[in-house]
Image (cartoon, rainbow, N blue to C red; front, side):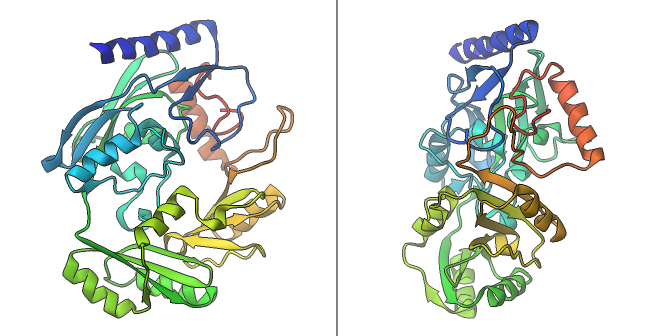
Length: 360
């Protein structure tokens, strides 16, 4: 009964905002508020933490459904009790992180190239649109998708298309064994080695390079991991789980800087060269760099590499008249699709307006 009341409370807030044309800022655990464009509009905060709890969990079916305000920690602890996990390793950035925030931002950890992204594991969602309507998409099984899977539009939309109420997620068993090997080599050698390893049949779950070392994480059956470990060679990293957690949560020393943090997603064969120190993840497809260079220069370099650049964190305060877009510019056709979706789900632009792009 309480969950029904909470749903009604959130729906009433959105309906009132729709009628009054009041902009709302959706806040969950407030752990990723730094991500996306800064709020430059007068808004009222609507919190999703009041709407929490696990609705259903079938370990044998590898599916969990929970309300958006449910703490990520609670979900991960329950999965761990059943020797299962969220395959995309969502970063928390705070002990208050929620499932809704993880899906709204769509961020994935180092396991992403080998198991899939957050979007790949969303089976269904229930949302409140900008008109105050409750809509459900998808379901709780992979085959419950006919046509375009609208539920996955919510992943990475930063709440601009709807306030998430419930999310169904596909989960996976935790690997029987996991080990990380580290090998000293130059960046160029590492890029070549990562490409070779990525084309192998080894049970990889992470490939990263920093500090003149290549880090190779192997996960799977004990026999497979043991055999792969001998082929990879290098030194076995002690407390490897802590290392990958530091990378995922950006508590690793690399991320300590007063300069802006950029995230460059590029093809595997790229060699990003902005004369900045970098942390390479995703088998060479993701570069983290600290730089205060002009945004256009960084974004243009990423485009030339066949990728895109996102301003992930910045210490620079911008005024409403000096907006700095955090995400890469959209091509005209893609931009029109974004506009059409926004008009369909949130015609008056009351939900997190400007968070993804300043005019959406």
